[in-house]
Image 1: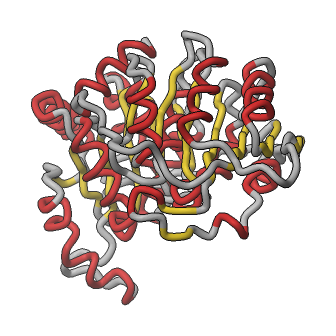
Image 2: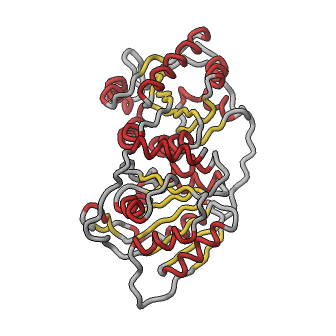
Image 3: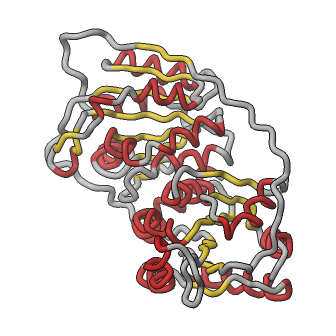
Length: 379
């Protein structure tokens, strides 16, 4: 058994100072100690996949990251680990608890995941080893994990068993509720069709300052942004649907410049819990834009459920400082200007028409190159 600090101190000495995750009873000592340590950052995500996205954004902003979760959460992490970390070559240290481990009496819901935890990591090409359960093993284990990540630019996992870490009480916390944000309706009324996505992106680029960073969701949003202007401050998420906003949050928490998340309605719906995380952390330099055409445009135009959702009201209730509803380019431009001139986080829900330009290409820059030039830009 190891004390939490016997792992966290050498981890901090190795540069790991940004943690994100979802709690597990086996992780309680580590999480409680991280939360109580002012030298460390902990982001409580709404889902494990969101935590991976947040950590990816923090890595892009220069932090060395750790994602902690129960092994049941590996299912929620498969998509971002395989379609964000792997193609973009973004390393992070994973601490995964082993509920239902062989020989361990546990709840029935952990039985199957307990059997397949190591093999799941193997299938995702994530090297792993047991969590260091003796103080003298922590620094060498961390050094080995770092050496592997330096070589592969990919995640590495420690698998933690019950009893690996001694109990640690949670320090008293004072969490003031985040006030409800302001709603502003900038829609122009009925009668005119919403503009195309390309037109909205053109208007956005006309208003954004050169120091702003943009993370665009997978699909036609990123492809059109690349077609309009390929710049170092643009990151095109070619996968990991729903992770643009969490990644933008991870970056925004660690830089002073404006960070813009370009979302689609389907992607925003996929990880709506991220809006609660964004609101609770009150990142003042984050602008979250949802371009809503009511469809999964990249897969043939099947309808989403966005017609039933008031994204601006959701954002305001989650604690965004302000949320705007727009359906025209002038209102959209005004919302961007207002979001750049006052503290955030701010959400802009922009209605657009389905479809895109014919013959739309894809980003020619490879994901690892895009990630590293974006990281250099943030630096």
